[in-house]
Every structure is written in structure tokens, then in C-alpha cells.
Image: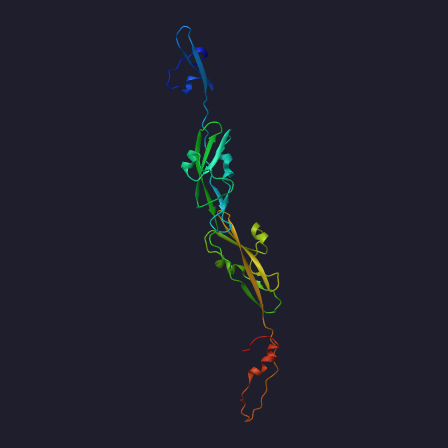
Length: 282
């Protein structure tokens, strides 16, 4: 009954009620029974009909992250787009799951959802949004994706023979490009500090004159034009001093037969030429 004491609209046991049967909710219905005897003994219980709108799981964008160390695994904050999933709905609870069955049943949620380490790339995450008072729910999904620059290698040192042995010289830094990376769509730049490489500022041009005598480390940034993911490797610049030889005094021998020809022992001039350098003269 819709009213107390067995009054109002009566519904038979097992009857199907429509949402449109009542103008607003919640609605209290009464279960009334009477013996029909004299005296007429009665009993009454009541319960509420509550209609709660099922929450909607709005389409959630994928989460992309750079694979900084190229190991195929990173930590993802699955909740970073939660406000998009909820889209302003109130009194809802959001959980994250590895498969649709778990999302539908509300089991095996990912904890903590803000620090999930992926097990595949890409990997699909299933989202359950549930009303906080009733078990009405909806699901959606999104992918977590790792982007990278591809294989990046530490190049061989660039070496320079220094004619005046002052420890400085000019280097064509781009000679290292093919050793660093060969993939398409990559930008390769060279920097004097790790901070410059990380921030992609103050890129060096070739030819580059080293600013640290004899040996200097250059930081090579490899960046993907599309994802903007980058890695940094080191490039050694090495300056080799050029031996400073001395012009020797003339090597003289006697021409015993006065024919203009004689044998000369050239190696005897090596100490004078090398001037105490540790090397070989040829």
C-alpha cells in the first residue's frame, strides 16, 4: 500500500512497479495484513523505494609516459585523468583493474593506483565507477603507453691531433651522430652540461672548440620529434699533443773515394730530433 492502515494504492505481492508510478523518490510503501476477524488483528511494516541514477564512466584518455631508462617499465599514476572519468558526478568511487571481469565484479583493484608499474606496453587498464550508496556502476578503459627514442648508444670518443700541443682543438660533433642513434624522427643536439641537455638549451654547433684542456665531456641529447621523449649520453673529446721535434744538425761523413756517395747512419740523429720525447722517429 502507498498509505498506512491498508489505504492508498494497493499492489499485489510480486507486482512489477514502474519508475513512472511515483512522482518522486524515495517512496515509502507499507505491508499491511489483517485477520478479518472480530476483533480484527492487524500488522504493518514499511520499506523505502530508492532510485539512484547509475554513474557514467566517461571516456578517459590514454596515459603516455617516456621510458627514460629504456628498460620497458615505468611507474604510472592511473588516477591522473580521474576527473575526466567522473566528469563532475558526486558520491562516486573509482577503482582500477587489470581486466574487464574484475572491473565488473569490483574485485582485485589496483592498489596503489597512483603508482602502478606496467607489465606490458601498451597495457589496457579498466576503470569502474560506482555509486557510493548503491552498487550501481559503469566501466570504461584506457591504455597506458610508454614512448621512447629507441636504441641510443654512447659514441666512441672524438679525437684531435693538436699541432701546437696547447690542449685545445676543433671538433665536428656531428661526426658522432650515426653512433649515437640511427632511428627516424630524432633530433640530436650537443651540450656542455647535463642541465643544458636536460633542458634542451644552449646547443653547440660544429666545429666546436673544447673549453677544457686535453679532455672534455659533451652531453648528447636525443629527442623524438613526436613524443618529445629524450635520452642523454656522454661523448668524450680527447686532444692529443703533436710531438714537437727539433731540426737536427747536419749529418756528415767522409767520402773516402771522392765519388760523392757515402753511407749514413740516420738513427744516430734520433735523440737530437726527438729532443727527449718518448717516441720513434722514422
